Image (tube, rainbow over the protein chains, first blue to last red):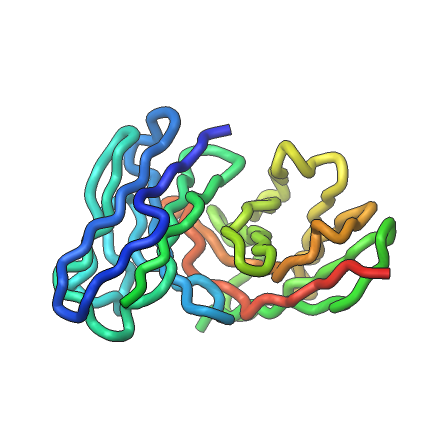
Length: 106
Length: 121
């Protein structure tokens, strides 16, 4: 199985801050990397696929980068609604493993 | 628009078999490069990928749970069914089904609301 490791596990930030969450794959996954946002009691929301392509309707303050084994999700200027848990997931092969999540809190 | 909805029991006893149904609309389960996945999330924990069934009926499973999982689809009913045998309290989780396609390079772009399944005697 390909292991996905996110860092940090939790992150404290303020509205207006720029934050970056990283995700590392245990082997190369090209750019088959997806990012999700999840709020308590809700299903995950699809943010980014192909490492850097924003899903329709996702604000442009979100961006993704990386290829191979190292990836990043950046939020350029935090809005109140961005405080949530973020997951990366590889879709290069099955099992389609998720990272352990990064909790972004105030 | 694409929607998915999970249904099934919310309480099962240890050793019982869980059967969950994902009813979909807005797309066909036979459309090329389309799939439906199952993902679960124990309370307060991370997402765990369980299984995936593709438009051409290819099926993939989590290696750690493969012996206990079966996924099937009924295209005419627009339903995907997940069965998990020998349930244990550690299987208590919210179970989600989600749409995937080649368009989004295998990401899960639409999700059901999830169903919380508790395993307890």
